[in-house]
Structure formats: C-alpha cells, structure tokens
Image 1 (tube, protein in one colour):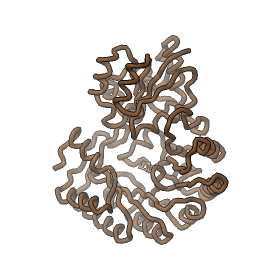
Image 2: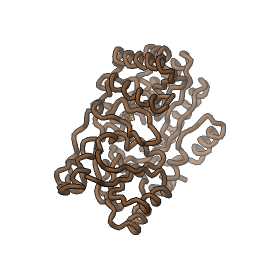
Image 3: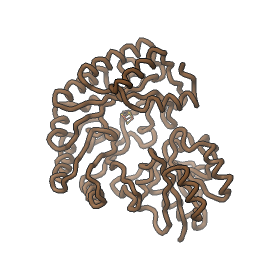
Image 4: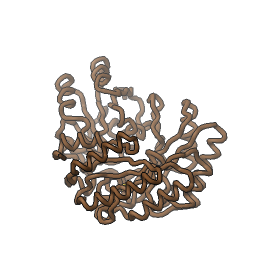
Length: 400
Ligand code: SF4
C-alpha cells in the first residue's frame, strides 16, 4: 500500500494527530503548519488525503472551498471535537468524510479501505457512511507521538471525565469513565521525549489530581505512585516535570493538603491552574460543576499557603448568568487577586457535542468588558477571552 497523507496541523491543533502516531504504516505522512505550507505541499506533492482536526471555526468553509477549487480530487477528512459533536454541519463545510469519536483504531482502518476496496460502510464513525460511533479505546495501547513530527505535545495521561459540565464536551465525547495511561507506559513516553531532546515535561489531563481512578475522587496511592515515578525519572534524566498546570489543570475540590504535598515533593510545578468557572453557586449548579464557590476559595487559599502561584479559570457569559451572578464572580475574583492569584478568562462559546451546544452566551455589560480589559492591561488577567469574543461576535451574537 502506497499513499500520501497531509495533516494540517495549524498551531493550536497539533496535539490532535499525535494519538494516531504508529497506527499508520506504509504511507508517507506530511505536515502543514499553516495555510501557506498547506498549499505549497498540496501543489508540490501528490497528496491523496488531507486531514484536519476540527475545532470551532476551523477549518473554515472558505479555506475548504479554496482547496477544492485548486485540488478537486483530494479527499478531505475531518476528525476531532467539532466533527464528532456536529457531524452534519461540519460535513457540509466541504469535507469528503469525517471520522467521529476516538480515531486510534478507526483511522488505520480508514487508510486500509481508502487504498483498498473502499468499503467505507465497514468503519464505525466514518460519517456519513457509517454513523455508529466507534468504541472508546484503551489509551495505554497507543503510542502518543509521531516520530517525525518536529513538535511533541504534552503527554496525554488520562481521557474522559465523570463530571459532565454542561459547557464542556469532554464527558460527552470521551465518556464519563476516566481512562489512564499506565505508569510504565508514561515512563516509556518520557524516555522517548528525552531521547528527542525534550527537557521540560507537561501532561494533558481533564483533571490531573484524578489520576488512577474513575475520576470522581482522589486516588491517593495511585497519584503518589505516579508522581513518585515521575520524580525518579526527573532525578535520573535531569528534566523538569510540571503537573497540575496547563494542560493538566485541576478541579478545586481535588486541591487539598495531600495533593499539594505530593506536588511539592515530587514535581517542579510552581503554578497550579484551578478551574473555577464562576463565582456564583447558582451558575455552578446550572453548569453541573459539582463544586461550590467555597471549594474554589479553599483551593486557592491552601495552594498559596503551600507556596504555589495560582491561575484560576473563569468563563464569562455562561448561559443563564445574570448581572447578580457576575457581581459574585467579580467578588470572588477580587479575593483571588488579594491572595496574589491570576485570572485566566474565557468567554462562553457553545461547543458542539456539549449539552449547551445551542445555548447563547449571556450578554456582558460594557462595564464587565472594561473590567476584564483593565485587569488584562495590568497583567492580572490572562487567557483567550479576546479570541473568544471575536469568535462570538463573528459567529453568534453581538455582545455589546
Ligand atoms: S470542565 Fe473539566 S471537570 Fe467539567 S466535564 Fe470538562 S473536563 Fe470534566
């Protein structure tokens, strides 16, 4: 079997292809990091399949139209959260087909069928040919990295989440049962990374302190065993290990004396990223967060007590959020700032695949936006809030 596939791994989406790594054999793999490189590679190499990992607003219909116009015979495949959460609309952007759900097993089958009999109906999740989602995979069985990718994303150690927050698609796309990479497998990956020259190790997890269990509680022994092994590895190889910081942030109800002691003893983490999302218990409840404002305050207090810097995630404009809720959020933010914490601000964007996929962003007042901007100028508030505002203004509603 011979063939050529181009992965469009524009910045920000490059993690997406890593789990497919060693599942593809015998075909030549190319990568394009931006639109320019994409067209150069499509023009110079005879590419059969162009693969995108879809996210909200990416790729755009305009880009796919442009590609189709110049390369009418190319097979454009989409995967990722946007495709899985809203296959009908995503397909209509101009894709040839989509691979829904977790693709580690279905992607190599697609490649085999593409270059073989093209029995696409036999592949679960190859939309629109087969609309049944594939089974969830055992992440421990799949090596996470492409050998020839010039960038190695943080290592995914856990997948799935039991909490089912309504603004988030993780539980609905990856399931409510948390699955984990084994410690042995994690260390194998770290050896790979060190051999590739990496000196700083980060991880991907929906909730890093939930490692080892079903995700609902702290599994103290499993967490300590993992962190102890990471510590041994770092001593031996002289690398830095960051855990509980982006993109392996933690829920506030998982931050306590014990988890922080582990973090201090075994890792190089200086700053913990804690998901608060709102300062209103009413909004937290509506969003199905499963923790309270008090949990957030306690998590920040104890983290500061143990000497960690903190960044706390907030989502402004959560559906149903009212002015009085936002006032409570600002009160919580002020308390966090008083404790020398930073704010990581987002604006609610309805995510395909989440229960709130069709909800609208609650309207922010000019005063709220001014406050966000002021804190941002003072570098107390960071995050992608501006990018989110642009997406919302372009795609959904005018905020002011
Ligand atoms: S926001 Fe975090 S805790 Fe909530 S469902 Fe998503 S991953 Fe789980």
